[in-house]
Length: 249
Image (tube, rainbow, N blue to C red):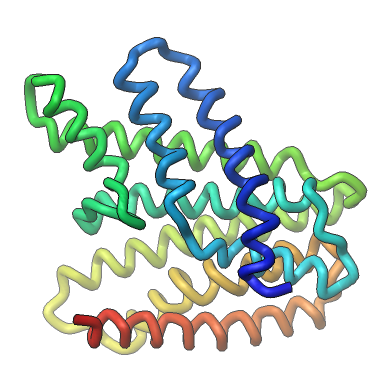
């Protein structure tokens, strides 16, 4: 299945699942500002995205005979929900103001605070709201994974959760290395390799592929193949992305 065909099948289920998750935590407060900022998450979700990670996880599952069902798509939606959490925090770190043509979450919160003539350091308060909403998205991703996939054994689902846990650690460390590199006058090749491996290759390709594969009962040999393939394509993806950053007008 092409990624375009996958998105056609995946996006309605993902949007429905995200709406359910956002409604769950936004309903805990009747404050209009909190409800408005929470629902901006759905605007960000609907604005676009490659959906690479759930697609790769689905490929890992189907290559070993698994079937793409609505239940599986709800499960891999957790990877896109976690990615949204990472982007919310990343936009704060990078001072981003727009994503896919809509305001980033911290910028949206700041604009609303400014319109309401609130007091204090509104930019800082907006960032604080976005950080906490990002944390809620991380928690939502964890909940979505705990629902599991019907027909998949507890042992395989436990293995998939273990892969997810490692993925979370890897991308956090990769981001920390990336941030740390910005404060160095010289960045050596080893640090760049670590950042590319953890933040892109493993996060985008290796771990999602392994998550899908272990759900389908992959052997150690297959998982080793996932590592080799995912690392190679992930590093190529990052090199191309860096090249585009340098050459785009």
